[in-house]
Image (tube, rainbow, N blue to C red; front, side):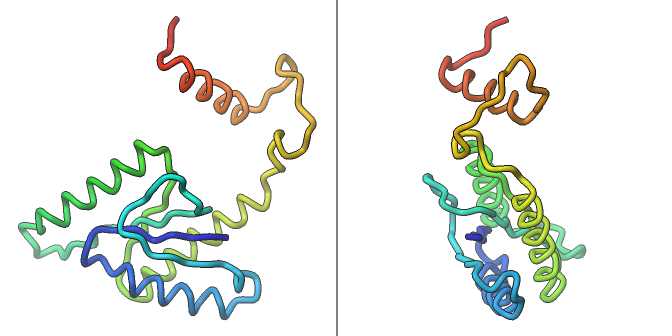
Length: 152
């Protein structure tokens, strides 16, 4: 699994990446996972999981740094506009690492349960008898992308 960590400046991306590399390497089930740090997401997005650093602002901080807030908002906008799913990681030090590991385990478990895509299997459902909501969503999303708009 390829994991990327993105976040605003000063959110501790590098520290989290190092902690995750150590934790994942120590676990036999995740020793082959890679963790990379990037300032901003980009297309093509070759990662299986994107972790966004949350803004853990101190409660006494009346005026958060506007540059950090703008950077975080830009990252979230970019992730959304590129339709990149992500998990937000919160906490301090070890708690943040545990939060990230929880997201990684959850994503790994869900991706292991998913059946191979229809394109990879060579076998396709007859759409009139299919009741798969995710399949219907993918089909509708692809149609919207190609037509550019939805018409009633």
